[in-house]
Image (tube, rainbow, N blue to C red; front, side):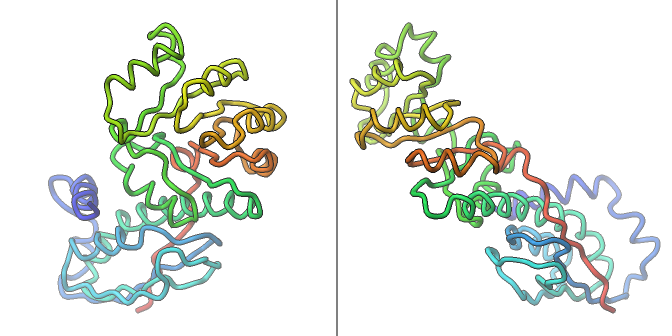
Length: 274
């Protein structure tokens, strides 16, 4: 899945005429050695995407990896050295760094929450709130950061949300329609935002319940009501400053959309070595 995504990104950057700046400035036979270097602390993710960009531009480019995905980075850490034709290295640089900085940002944000709630049983999971075209890459980065993946798309699990319930005419009607329409291997989760809705869910023997925008006090009440009969997932309002209190409620999962749609990039640069 990596190569088609990187290839499309390179084509977007190269346009109709290629890298006219580099081709004008750099002699065709020039060679150079560069290094991918961390500017800020974080967790590395997306190295294969970055290295694929260099290799697609020019197979003569060689790479020596110093730190694999999942490595904790400190400022100044060398991630990999890139050597070979200078034109190819400069042309691939931005695409490589875009992938590497963004995915490392996702992994770093995930690791920050995972570390913050260490000692609690809750797992950190991502959502479908991903950048178009980058879902597989971003969900990979979440795993690198110590998190887990929620459903990949609309086709691999059922999540009955408030609009489904409203259109179906109620929770029971929505669940009954799902059970009549999907196979027995498909997990069913229901979103609720009140304890009264949770009472209805408990009577329907579901696989999981999404406790939406509940504060820690209400979450503890909900966890007590469920009493281990299905997986509990907290969603909404989970930030670095609220994550510990939410995890302490006893919830099984914490789904966080901003890990993928709003994570700050990790600053990584390509330094010229000679």
